[in-house]
Amino acid sequence: MGMSQGRLRPADLAREHGLSTQAVRNYEEDGILPPAPRSPHGYRQYTRVHAQALRTFLALRPGHGHTTAGAIMRSANAADREAVFRLVDESHARSLRDRVTLDEVGRALGEITAAPAPLPAGERPMSIGALARRLDVHPATLRTWERAGILSPERDPVSGYRRYGAESVRDAHLAQQLRRGGHPLSRIAPVVDQLRSAGGAAPLEETLRGWRAGLSRRSRSMLTGAVQLARYLDLVDPEEPDGA
Image 1 (cartoon, rainbow, N blue to C red):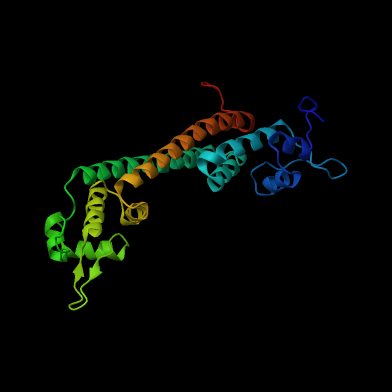
Image 2: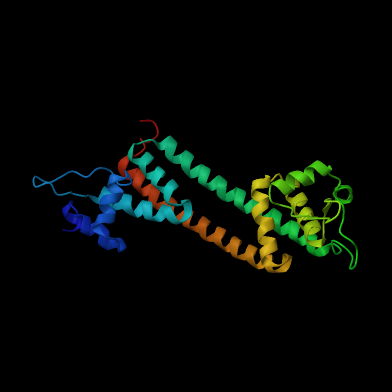
């Protein structure tokens, strides 16, 4: 049964995207597709509206993620344009925050790379007071960063006092730069952890390039999804012309 005949089977929708017919039925049950009318024998009868709904969801998913894409479709099917636009705007805002964070991390790493070595060769680890003075922060701030997993100072085996080696000093500098950019500790901790895992700033820069490429792909996918979403909204909830 073709599109021109106005009625489509689950297999017709599934074939376009290489899906199973059960996946199409699942999307309807989840509200991603609007409810399909049934034939006298109880078979689902999809239309071009359902076909466009499936295209739209699959186009939205790479940029917005499965959960948000599903929420957008359910709002569209309920003719709640305000909710649709809010969900789209929130997703774009998250993408922008990620891009700003990426820029801040890049700048912070650049400053760390350009700065002198965190500790001159042979210099003993710093105390919490010395590091706090170096960063112009309160020692309590460093203890907070430690609880957040950003710093991992060693402990003096005799006194038990914290001792900050070159790696911890470097991590503290990065955390300070990101805090100045307004980033919460929960977002800083994973970045510092990546810095440690990468083995330094230079390897992490390669990770950041991959992160930036991923953001670009996501932004491009959002544009593709927006085109399909606009087409779907025109089908299910067309706006009235100005002056109507």
